[in-house]
Length: 316
Image (cartoon, rainbow, N blue to C red):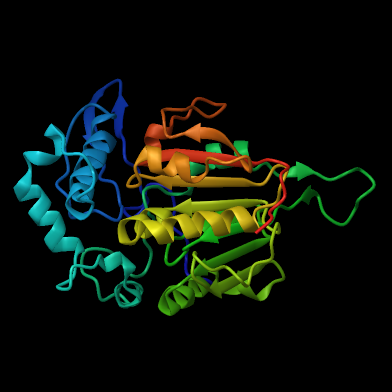
């Protein structure tokens, strides 16, 4: 039997918004994300936590990106910048998120500030589902096709590691799935989370680098889910960030393939510019958006970006 999945309201289920009820005082729940060491702001406003988070990360990026123009936001918080630098940079000045050793240690449970067992980056499946299902619906098959009830899109999970969200995604019917991580320990952790789902035809877990997805065929992916992987790459090396976006462009099916990115680190302008070509049509640009039943992107604990591939074929 696979390990039990996280259920809604479990302590490790994530949400980054303030809940309000008519007869009770607001109760703020803390988001689970890559920067959990940063100070949290308790506020009755559901907007404050993500905005503060973006502000703090922007302060960090001003340390590692000296070419960024200085602003009042980034020049008066040297103590905060020092704290972030000490937490994320190694002795040789490199970001820990660019070290395989760090991710191996985390997935093996050797990093004290986050669980190696299960760790939902930014948000869980419940928060993400309304937006994902709108962007990547399971389409009914023609009536004369009796083999499958739905057309199953090929879903790519970028940097799965120990995030259980893809397992929920699989159980929702998205059973044609490829998940990868460049940490071998992360791959093993992902296989444990999928359990017997890996033994059925439909789930493939690969050890692969987002900058070089040679094991995945060109134009073979219908939808990609990225929850923080592009963020981690961007902090480490912006040139590798561009390589990763290029690889996503290559593997995504023209005329309708989707990339869903939940990000709270990459500058909005950098993220939108990376996908700015005649091969992509932007759907979500990081601003507040709502799902068909009224769910808001504020509940994701980060910003929602998405793109649809145009009909232009990959030319290399």
